[in-house]
Image 1: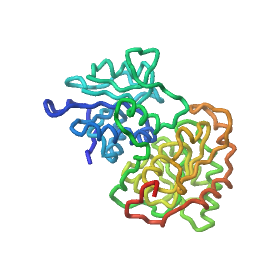
Image 2: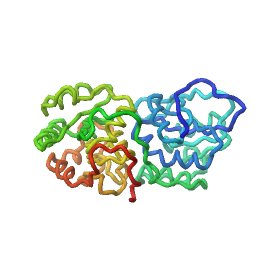
Image 3: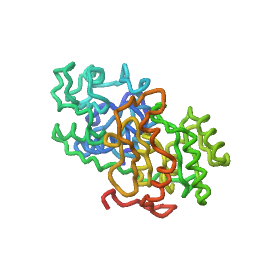
Image 4: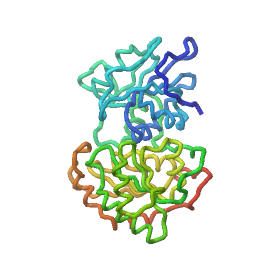
Length: 341
């Protein structure tokens, strides 16, 4: 494995060529890009692979085995960073896994890379890449980009190893009510109804939330009558969150990073979709993953209110999906089989 670390300083000079990947987005975005990152590693075994992304994702990048170093880079929302603190000679290869438009293209072109791999866009005609398809699944999209440049990539190559350390709640059902935007946030009252029903069945239920979601976690815990020990707010460190997810009975969440982490760790999951359909961000087809979705017109994934498609999902549907999951045994400490096993 190639351990990644966050580092804004200059890399060692005169050692090996460098490949820069731009994906300055969130946890789910990074996990959806794992197959592409691993394809780049296989195609460039002698290179230092640098990921331009949020510094806090360095432990996740390390777990992929495909990244050597994280160059801290981020911007509000899903915007392209204005600047990269790249030092030393230009990157030998730069790869745009962030988007398909002139802002990300020009950010990388300003570094004068020896080669740029990116999708084509009329605003940057000098980039002769493959076309962008808006309806494509995120994992497939980036693998197709690399394949167009002669780099074989497998969208199913997305599994992560279980982290060291114990889970804070082995065998629990993990509920993650937060999301990157209100339009993707299922009502907390419905999560509470699911939690109460599961507890009546004898299941332990824990709630997780990001650093700024303490109120949401507290509200859900109060509505469901959960003890304080089962309300894990504040944004768990990656190792603890990954151990919790890896040893969970199942994970229930909206279309957000924790759902992708459950897939990466092979944990049974129920993911609630809206306004974006699972055909673009959903889990691979497998009995241990259920994607709930009521088809309808596309909504705004960054909207300020829960999307109508998401609101059509009921608490009973979530419970039914949990009951039909192909759930392995509870406290798993050995690697799970591949998704196609």
